[in-house]
Length: 195
Image (cartoon, one colour):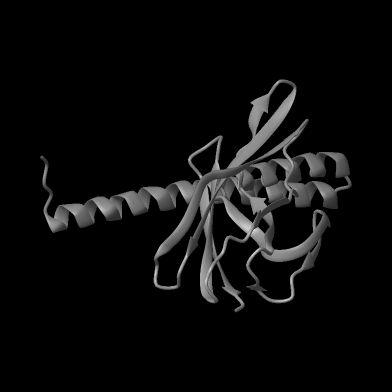
């Protein structure tokens, strides 16, 4: 078994952080450079070339971005991207449907024939505020988007019937895992069950 001193471990952590910061700066430079080029091209009247440069800037941002959620909410209904009816509060009764709307950002698009495909696995967990796990469902859902080009404005809805819980406060932990990379995101939503 290999052991490291606290100083060696700290040095390794600092080195890893410095390398990560350097990589992030390189990505940020590429994003900014392509966006600046788009701005210059549009100012000079080359709108088609400006759009292509902006698309490259967005692609660089998407590749560098961690998996994250632009929006997440308990909802009563969903009609499409950005078109949802937020639920009035997060109080539920046993047997109600927990319906979540969210907009992921940073998912990886993998080649798929003549186009691309993105896929996220969804894990769900219900906990007490004290951390006691009451239920978990790994791979509860798989979400997929496919098209000719990467789609940056996508939404998903995940729903399940609320299991029987005593009246009180709870936490819904949602974990998204990118099927095409090692990116993941985790969000915790408080909710309550009425007596």
